[in-house]
Image (cartoon, rainbow over all chains, first blue to last red; front, side, top):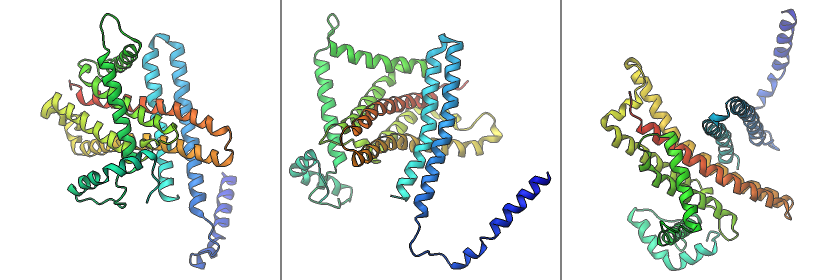
Length: 102
Length: 243
């Protein structure tokens, strides 16, 4: 608990050290393209989390088919449907990037 | 003058006047009056003519005693979608097989035509998947109303009466989100396939882009299957009799 308190306070102290940056009023001249960097991070985050989710779906489908090979058609249907839904969420992120960045 | 494929140039040379007249009926003006037919419309016309020719050819060769190879291929496609309809929709699914097979063949041909040089996939433009999604949406709502009558509204109400206002808003939003998700799923997969092939073409033009074109073939089939499967699921939900 003491370590947590010390950690939290030091993080907030360092964060507050950046306050003077807000005084400069906004435009950096050789503009760093924050939109591109943010969209790269956003896409990577979306793809990584989606991969985790799809991994869970695939693992559950494999286990189900192994336990009950007779239920294969239903489980295959649920597998394909689940993978497609998760993938479409990642593609929404991609479309937003193409609408705003490119 | 936008970049035109050779088919688009050919169509615009002969049918520009007709196209401008049709647009004029709806008070729309093309930004390029001498090339009013865009590439994706020309590609859809090609797909349409090709599919109609194939269907007429198959229909003329149908025979019960001695089915040829082509007939067996189309019978198997129809059988696959009909069986899926039986699994998902259950009783009374035969009515929807026609629409689903046509939708599937149209989307598959649109996706695959992008691989041929000199043609581009119309599904890589957002309007075409939107058209397919809106038509599917109208189709399953129409069938839900035809099957359930005014009781179709019960699908939107939820299990208990005192949640009905909230549930109605949520259900309407979710049904509208279906149009968005069907459109974006198909469009983004095809568009991303094009983009990725282009990127690798600019990096290493010799053999690597072919791998991505192979991937594009696989993705085309899978996305067609997903679209038809989701259309089947939505039809099944709309047509279900509430107990």
